[in-house]
Image 1 (cartoon, protein in one colour):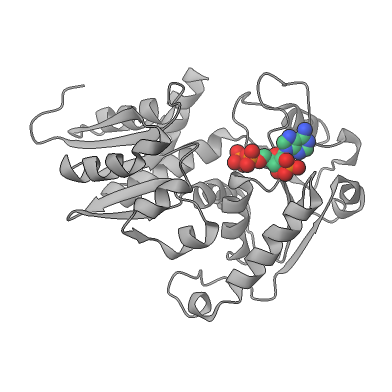
Image 2 (tube, protein in one colour):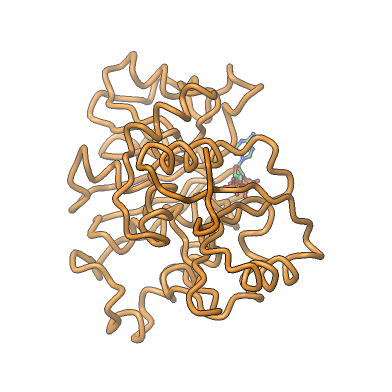
Length: 297
Ligand code: ATR
């Protein structure tokens, strides 16, 4: 890759960032599209977040991704935060425009973009396992896309209760209801629910989409699944946000009963595509991005 003096610089900040797949993904796209752009990983500790944002402005960097553990803390150093990202409470994409930093969250919308390609979300019942950062981004984004019911199941039940209270408050906020950011398909009568894993057996019977946002099944614990395989059924779409391994135990078991499965690689690729769109307006070649990521996993 050759970057000239007119080239544009994008990057990633996180700690650690050694395993970043986004670096391969974005640089391959820039090469493929013959763009004079480069994507650079920057290992930035918490105490340097402010310096990193000011430095990026000073160096005329065009855009940054933000990864673990900075998605929340970075917000205090940003000039403007997209309203949906503000409601999610975390950001992963920063765009620099005329010396100003504007931050977005593409994790949720990225995860859902692929789902929308394979099914309609309208009137669906969705169960999300886990209530961490990924769950929050995907859950909030789903809440405003016209689904009928969203159930959060978590090992620590109080955390799930806290999450849905927070969502309900935010979605009842008149400034959101009147804002241009709300999707046209928003169902204001969406039902929120929560509980522990004990309610799954009953609740999964009429569920359309099951999303795993827990870390259960993540490498190296590849023989673990968050749920009992006997309760899976063929009418489900099962989406595991874990991308390492590519096919988790949960997805393997879901496939066996005839459910449709979606691997976490889709979320990784589509959130990257959404970031690229924000920075450059370009519709990213998602198939190529997926191929690159798969080759590195
Ligand atoms: P991320 O930010 O990547 O979404 P996280 O914030 O660490 O991840 O959240 C991890 C989620 O996985 C949590 O919902 C956690 O449940 P608790 O809130 O009870 O801790 C869930 N999780 C982790 N290990 C689990 C396990 N062994 N069984 C069930 N849930 C688990």
